Length: 358
Image (cartoon, rainbow, N blue to C red; front, top):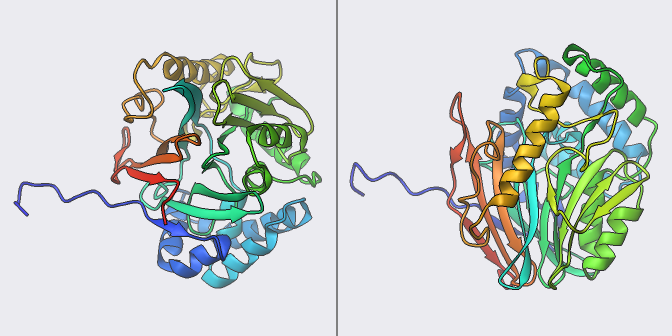
C-alpha cells in the first residue's frame, strides 16, 4: 500500500446469533465487549468508575422487577465477562436521535441516526442476526446489549427507538438534574417492560407491520419512548409516541426527534449532556424540531447514501447512521466517532446486509 494511501476503514461485523442470542455474542467476542465497556466508563469523570458496581446492582434490581423476558440473558452476559457495567449499559438510554420513515421506489424506508455520549459505540457496532417465533431479523447492536434499538426483519418491518422528552416539574436549566432524579425515582416502582426489550419482543413475535404497530402502541412500557416503524407496503409507516401506559400513533408526519409532535406542556425535548445546565426549555424544543425538519426536507435518497447525515442531525454524540428497507430486505450501517472536540467522522466502512446474508 502506498504510504499516502489511507488504510481501509474497518468492516462492521455480522454475527449469527440465532442459536444463542446476545449471550452468544459476548462469548464470541469478549474482548470487543470489554473494550466497549471501558470506552463507556471512560466518558465519565475520574472516580465515577468506582460506583459502577453499585449502579449495576440498582439496575439489576430494577430490571429484575420489570416485565422483561431477557433479564437472565443480561445476567449470563455479566457472568461471562466478569466485569461491572454490563447491567448499567442495559439500563441506560441514548440522549437523542433523528429518524424518518419515507417512501422510496414504491416502498417504505426507515433512516435514523443514533446519538449517545459514550465513545466507542461507533467503532464497535455490530449487526446481529437474531430469530424468534415470527422469523429472523437483524439488530444493529453491541456485544453485551440485550435489547433492540434499531432493527429490520426482512419481509416484515423495520423499527427504531428515539428517546422521548423529559417530564419537567421546573423550568430553570439548573433544575434539570432535579427533574431527572425525580423521574428516575418515579420509574423505580414501574414493573413494565423496558422499551428496547419490548422492541426486541416485537421483532421476535410479530409477523407484520400491523401486528408490530399494535404491540408497540398497546403494551405498557417502563418509561416514555418514541418508536418509528416501517413496513413493506406503500403507506405502511408510522411514529408511535409512548408514555408508560398511553400512546399516540402518527401516520402522516413520520419524522421523529426527541420531543412529542406537537409538543405538550410539562414535557421538554432531550438535549446533549454538555448543554443541560445552559440551554433553555425553548432551545431544547427548537433543537429537536430543526433536526426533524432537516431530515424531512432531504431531497436525495436515503437508500443510496448517507449524505443526509449533516449538522444538526450530525452532532458530537452521533455514533451510527442506518437506512433499511424490509421490503427490499436491505440494511445499511455506518459507524461514527469524534476523535476530539467537534463533529464525528465515519470510522467504519458502510456495512450492507441483505436478507439472504449468512
